Length: 232
Ligand SMILES: C[S@@+](CC[C@H](N)C(=O)[O-])C[C@H]1O[C@@H](n2cnc3c(N)ncnc32)[C@H](O)[C@@H]1O
Image 1: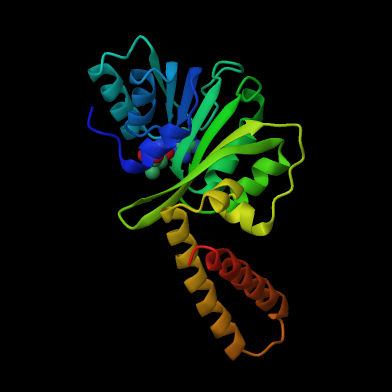
Image 2 (image 1 turned 135 degrees about the vertical axis):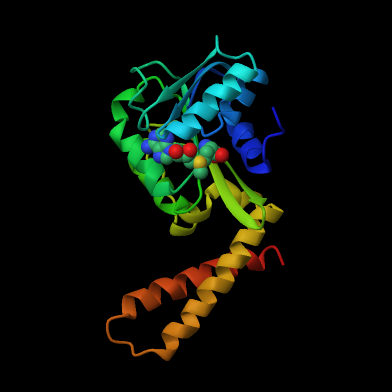
């Protein structure tokens, strides 16, 4: 198997050892195959919605001699899984809304799942917000940059504690904001520049109807300025 992309290596690093990993939206099944080959998962189930990547997943698993330990299934989200069958989930490379939809529709399959490693391409804040409202805490997270695109990854675990996150922590992650590594700083700087541009364009417009939006943008710019002041 060719080397995992930097993004998928980051996703895999967030995964803790597990008996059975479900990789939802497996595409080539590189992630679940690497998890098993590295001994992070004893077994795996790759799930694919589309036939072409499902065939590709089957090819990878067969070529690596993993057919006994990695099952490849065609279907939507968690539907092809039996309740209690997997103990960990990875869902990577989709929008946060798509990931949320998969988790919501498959709630009954999550009873034995003690960790979910999620890597939304967009809408990380809305996904964190959904997770925190649904009885999960963010146990670890990371930011990775690949081909000039910055991605966020997170490991969510069931939790009874009702943890309150600030809007900035939901968007970028409390752990990322504490760690402030170079990828996180780049993400914050990029977004700071974006929201500053939006702030300027809103200032030029008439205030009617956009007061709330203006306030939200002003608060976001101030919060990002404050965080970035500590790293400059
Ligand atoms: C962009 S690829 C990402 C593949 C891989 N997880 C990664 O991160 O490199 C998204 C894959 O998810 C699959 N997918 C999208 N929605 C899905 C769903 N509801 N259930 C299963 N697979 C899905 C797509 O067919 C596609 O192969």
